[in-house]
Image 1: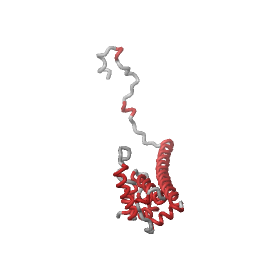
Image 2: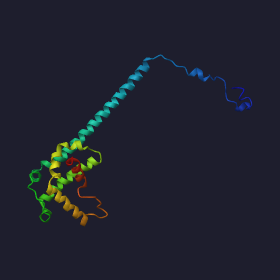
Image 3: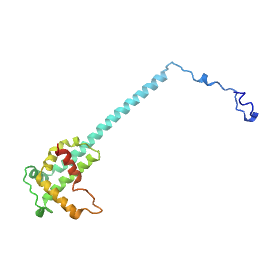
Image 4: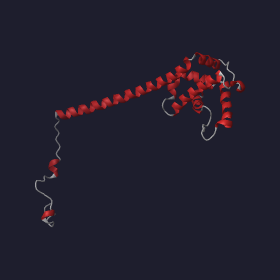
Length: 189
């Protein structure tokens, strides 16, 4: 090394004193000390703790999602007037008549139901919940999506959208789009 720098003036030569060869620094020591054991145990414990936290967080999120769906549907079906209306739909006693439907209690209840299913459909579409998470209300959903009078109401709303509802601020593709998307997932085999 010294011969390589001999052409440099003394002020520019690197200090070569007290430099040990790199081969002396790279020795492998196979001994294991108590510090190494403690460090390895700490790493393993941290990794296990992290994995348990991930599992607990996933379970907590699932419980929160299901609790939210429970509260939404419970609030809906806890109302006795709404429950009576739902039974009219379920037993085929509801008839949609566009002339008498506006501003009626039936419109209020049916829209409330469809808005709730629209919200649930949006949550599923956005990946917040899964279709399997709504299995507790799949019967109620199927009773609505297979009801011919509800279908007539949605078709009537579609014509209303074409006539009045689609402008630059209201660009939904169809009325209660997320609810209809949910119906397609739950009711069609």
